[in-house]
Length: 187
Length: 187
DNA sequence: TAAAAATACTCCATAGGTATTTTAT
DNA sequence: ATAAAATACCTATGGAGTATTTTTA
Image (cartoon, rainbow over all chains, first blue to last red):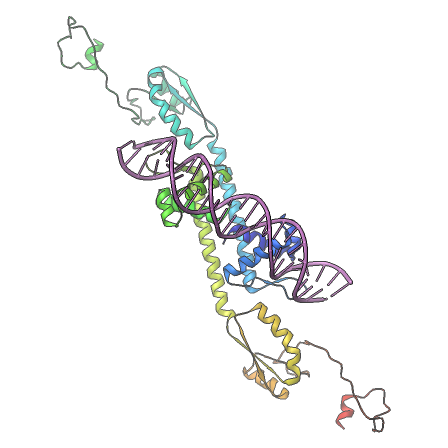
């Protein structure tokens, strides 16, 4: 059973006429007749009493009429729910990143836009060290950095893991070392 | 938007796969793909995120999924309501009538059966004068008589009005009368 | 590379239209 | 006799199938 048949039936019931209903839903009278017959056949119930002077609903017809209105209401409710959602899902998402990290961001933006095509994504070029404070200030919604921000007002998630190779001349002070820590490089 | 599309979407969402959903609803995978695309196009909302490893619903998808279940429940409720009604509308209707009144009954039986094809109508041939007491006893549901039963345990409704012509020889005692009352005939 | 989904195309079922008949008042 | 609904028949839209390509992990 489909919503369209119920809407046809609902129109016939309210208009109390097949031909007026047909006019209202922009169909011909035979199309309406057949739609009602199909619905009656599907539900295995006569819905309309065509015998009397004015068109009347059978007991089953009254039940179906009642439910067809409830189906309509539900459809309307759904549209409202979707409309409300749209107001919150269309807008701008500002992401902070710098030249090196934005490379790893691209793939995620592609995925995000598939999900929310209505949201405009803005990538703001920003000094890595400034990104945490900009997030806290609300200037950015998301930021990409290559260190742990260590701030419990922020939530961090690893999106990419990279390997850094340290290349140096054999004459250099660290030239014969197997591995070097980041802090040693800072010295 | 039709219930079928919602059911297809619901199946895809629960199965988390287009092909498994197709199998379940006895359709091919492309048919399911297109049905979802039509629904998305109609609602102007992406419903399913196909990018990730596992199939996920978008925000709109979650809303539609929720409503599709409510639509299902409503359809089920309607079927239950109709089933309950059927229990009360199938049975036997016993009508009492005699030879002369049953003539006028036929048309009403035809109409009644159009309304309630499941009810068996039995016409019991009965002496007119016995019908009121049989109705009171519950042996009959309805009776057709040609006089007012004058009993407040019974409800009477005129279903036909007839004219009786009195035909008599001109030699007869009442031969020259313009009109004759029923009581005079009884004398 | 393998799976799952999307696309291309073809076909056919069925909803809807036109013309007409039947029914009811 | 008239108005409304049902029926007959035909057409065409669009949903579903098969075959294939594209995508993504």
